[in-house]
Length: 163
Ligand code: CU1
Image (cartoon, rainbow, N blue to C red):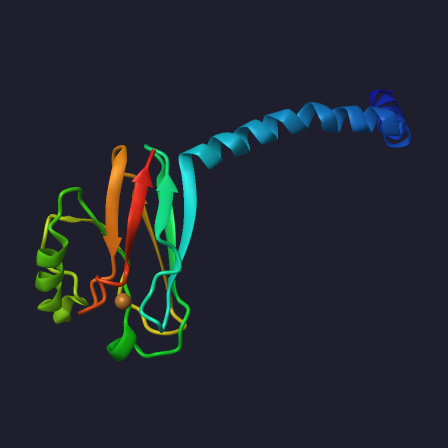
């Protein structure tokens, strides 16, 4: 008897398009809310380096407290030895020319010198390669990012803004 009622109920639901629609509408706001919340907690940024020794973006923006996923792509075709790029986020107040000089001497570690100035960095990549990193956004403020491949920082730099 119970099963019969259930079958009827299911049939009624299937037939009654209106009822089905209502159910969907009830569910929608919850899903959207969860998605919005997730979006606030995490952010995905994309930036690329080129064969012309440039980043394709001069500015990246995130919100304080966000988990940042950064997708770094080398959009060119030149090999790593000739036109390698990385993305290095530096602490506020870092002396960039001094850091770059240290980086130049750090070939064995892909030009990432031993330094407490680095907040986050990708690996060094060549044409066609991609590296993805995740890190927590630092506190509110404006930070510099550079490519630490020898001679690149003068052209390859930008601002990472935490709001
Ligand atoms: Cu570079």
